[in-house]
Image 1 (cartoon, protein in one colour):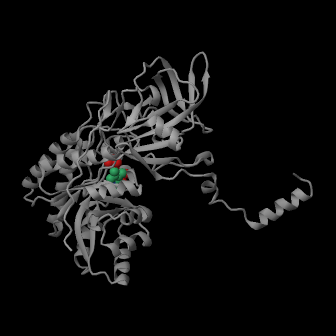
Image 2: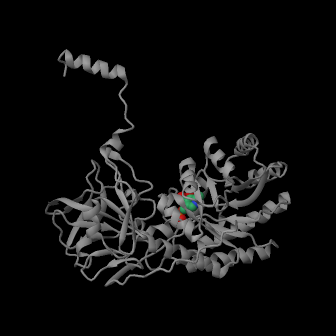
Image 3: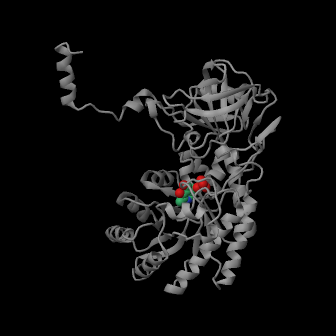
Length: 479
Ligand SMILES: Cc1ncc(COP(=O)(O)O)c(C=O)c1O
């Protein structure tokens, strides 16, 4: 059956007294609202800590991102980086929008397929892929971006066992990035210039390795090399640096053609795209109004790809990109409840029930997510406080924040936490993971269950001999 695409659902944009983004803002009661839901009501209904995702904002961001690129390039595929928010509901929304996806590891790929992602719009990335995930990808026709010389042997073995006649492949490359020798970003991959960071991380195949793989794959009947792939993660806020990277991808493609006679039909230039807001967000608040917009990225990158393809006499490749944070970041807030407040002459600490387990990127930089008092979101910031969590480390969620005075029981909400916070949350100090709700208009549905003590305990075991020893010692009165 030839399925026709459902017409795009029309987005109903809420009205706010002050907007943080299209679907998140301050309502007429002074509270923080996500679409048609008051975050204070949501926290009371679903408990804290709580992640709140806006379906409207997710759809809006995806469409704006896609449209920006389609304005500048005919053949563009947007693959949502599932890792940034890998809930099943999020993937369902991305499927409905027609987005592809990038997946890492068995579970992420399994969840995406389970949520109905189109395998032909999905890629599997990873530096050390296991047999199980390769089998899942091969059996479902997902394109695998190779990132080790012997990965091709494993893929071939599995494809033969499964009797799959055509496996889609890409090769993740290791660009030299000489033109970025003197450019410095947010150091996602350690210290040094963007070029040094690119050189020091584990990813990608050198030009010689790429050419060797291309030649090997050409001789394999059941393997179809489709694309070259690159991703340098978060670089900086300059669209021009991404354009340099994209140009290098085209140059690399031309070199591969010259050395092997093979030209891939697509280049996938990964993620790392950022977004800004007034007042700043992201590491040390660097993502402000000066950050590149979707439109800036699309304009500069597409121009670089087209110019260089013309210089190298290459047919324009299909252009893929894998945005994560730039699409999911601004879709969500995380709300925690104020507990103990400690006032010292030099400092005030406001303790929440939410921790850096739940907002792990707060540990990456001393200032990451903007925050407001959910029930007084437009209140004047009169109190300089450190917002902290309950963990046994310093657990700084929001150091040096000027907030309206809060009391025990109030709620503090962090903005822009839709990307990577839930998906990389952890359980240090045996904490339970929070619930997440998806808001659409005035309804909110749980999309991640809150963990219970039983969930946290479930993995732990005491070997029978240890149990017996302890019982014996207790009986003997040793404790
Ligand atoms: C291969 C790959 N693609 C895309 C992304 C998404 O990056 P971002 O969320 O910065 O856009 C990542 C992030 O780690 C990645 O590893």
